Image (cartoon, rainbow, N blue to C red; front, side, top):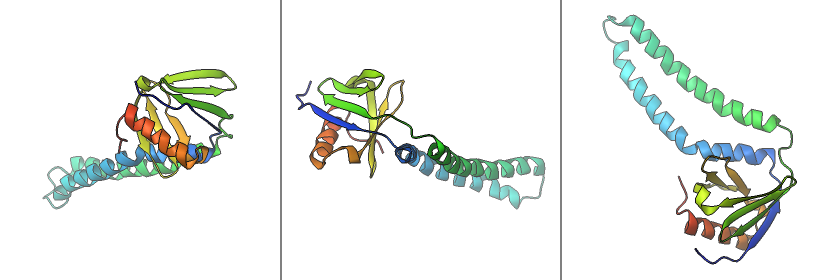
Length: 166
């Protein structure tokens, strides 16, 4: 158990915070998807120049090669658009960061989140995204922190969870 100075922050999430968190969460998956898509495309290209023995199979594979990236593009555009159309999402919340974890306080009451319930985090340009076991991810925009608090918070995360996920 590390000793911490108790830190209190407060803020209200905005629609754009959810969009940025979605993009940060999907960043690694996008690269893998591109690699797999190119690899799959390379496997069907030789069939294009073959003598045509398996044409029905080729047409199915080619349709899948076109549909899968199309679905990916739709998802990348559709989900952020849906997030932006939501009503202003959240009420103001207070967070207390201490040796036991993070205590989330709001209009509904308080909810403690132990450091043991957090298994990874990602650091973006505008926010930190914390991943909970079996729960919603926690979003901490940097605008909620002073520069000293931001550095201290990232230090807590490194001590308790480890290095940030990529």
